[in-house]
Amino acid sequence: MSNNGRVAVFDATLRDGGYYTSWDFPDDLVDDYVAAIAGAEIAGVEIGYRSPLLNGYRGRFYYTPKDTLVGVRAGLRSDQVLALMFNTKECTPADVAPILDATQGYVDMVRQAVAPKDLGLGIEIAREIKQGGFRTALNVMYLSHWHQDPTEVLDLLADQASFVDVVNFVDSYGACFPDQVGQVFAIASQRLANPLGFHGHDNLSLALANSIAAIDNGATYVDATILGMGRGAGNLRTELIIQYLGAQSGQYADMLKFSRIVDRFQPLLDQHHWGTNIPYSVAAFANLPQADVMDWLGKRRYSTSAVVEALQGDERTVDRRELPALKLDAQAVPARCLLIGGGATVPEHATALKQFCQRADACVIHSSLRHVDLFADYPGPQIVCMVGHEATKRASNSVLLNHAIIPVVTEPPRNQGVVPEGLADRCRQVHPFGVADAHSLGPVDDVSPLSLALGVTLALGFKHVDLAGFDGYSGEASGDLDMSTEVHKLLEDFQARHSGTEIISLTPTRYPLQAGSVYHEIGP
Image (cartoon, rainbow, N blue to C red; front, side):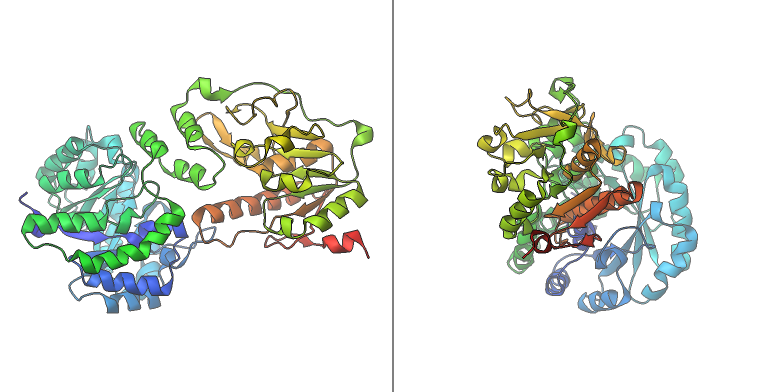
């Protein structure tokens, strides 16, 4: 390899890893990370995003305030580059000055994640960034979509070296192979005056091999993250590439010191489980975005096989059966219902909740199967909402076989296995509330348990809905934050569209709901 003495490794752990932590990391971890980077053969750090204000919560390293930059800059070596990332789709040229004004003197380079169709805008933004005194880089995404004919992309980038200091090609779907990467870099190194870099995702466990192919064909920059932490299947591992480059140059990396920061990130890997798996590899071979796969896996509703089936779009894996619609005898519909979520407050207050149901003669609607067993002895009507594969993962067969319980599923299409074997004759289907807003993977919508449960309340005409177990998530994990946002939006939309229905939480909640108390309801 001829380039090993000139290859610059950029570590993007906190920026790319933020997809799993909502861009929040503990101060002590950040301090140890910066110290480890400063002691390693790493040319620069892409520390986080800078962005205009967006809807929804994003933490410290999405907006990367000045005091954070000051601290990181002080911890790095003077020869190391401190970089920020822009999402081109979130910015305009007019945003550049306000966003970067407070960063001058601390930030050396601003990189942009840009789709090929937005390259014109990305170049305009790069001009503004350059005029502000920063070095610039364009991270051109979706390499697997255009590697066979890179002419159009390279033509747009030609003659832009005065405004674009580095051009990085990003294998966004982790779908490329080393020969494909090598060919693109061989062509680009002849066509472009800009230094070239590569950002590889690891869906097919090829991030290292693809990075080496890029280096062998002219790349002088490679991106990496500790333990590969990054969106979806993750990235090239920093600890691998610095060892590889060290071995090539004969100056072996001191991995004893660097292994300590790897150990610090191991609990995050244990918690969030990034890295390749069958769904991510299927998405790569099909050249599909991994964001949807990450979303479905993070919500933990579906088995791995179900996600694979949806990705492959095999009609044999789709359940298109029409089941009878949910109906209760008009004389048997209670005046009140208790809609039970999966929160920890349900077992804590289970005795009082059952007393309430018995006194109110309430219909119990389980939006999660997590606590069905606690109400196994309740004699009143119970409806169990089944989405994904919760029925096989959570509820015991003995509870579901209780004929006082009515299993409810969504309208077709649905994944095979959502309706457990032996229950099809008793299952009823309901149109979920808010299904138009659901994400889809293949032909099947990702309908949340609450969406289906709210559909049940509408189908049965309840005008007063008591809630229990909608505690809210504390947001440590990205999947928890996504589910919290989903529940929040569903409750907000439901109350806006059905103002005649009163919703009250009888147990503690973080959601913006009218608060009551189950203990007031059961009386003295």
